[in-house]
Length: 221
Image 1 (cartoon, helix red, strand yellow):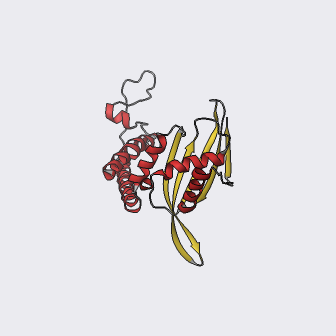
Image 2 (spheres, one colour):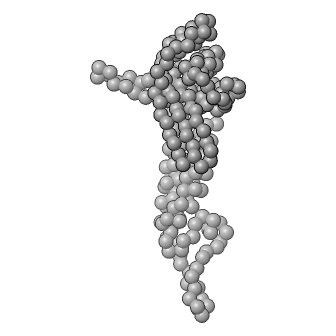
Image 3 (cartoon, helix red, strand yellow):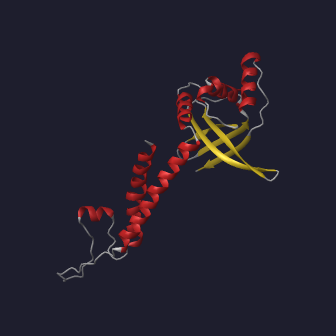
């Protein structure tokens, strides 16, 4: 159940992780965090020759603040999960993702379904974008031909395609040497109908369309 998963993730991320971070930043008097409260430990500074250790009490307002934040985080996770279920068919997205990852022509893939809005002639309309990301397992000679191969796989079983107005394809190439990394993303977007026509023409005639990619390169050291 997606709602239950959202609650568990909300508790794990915001409940546990958020609590540790909160106490480390705001509990300046005792510097005790979640692990200290669980184990019943505390770190104190004692002057030389002093036997008695002064006990510092924790301000109870910290727990009220943390409880409010945790409830808001869990409620937000439930809302986002319910909204996604009502607006998108994630079953098809996952099925397409699993299919792409099983292909020899694709080393790693990603599938995202987004809804954006555009304003045309003063009217606001929703646009659903299916984003397909593919990383080739080998050096490709032609990005245009590789785009036809990937989209041919994606369009092969149309029952796996969620309803979308635009299909965006991103091809990621590059290298990772540990001390240096470069990645180049070449992207192209078109309607499902135009993608289908281009793939059919490629598979029947062997014609590779002249695709004009938008390119983004990142280099990190």
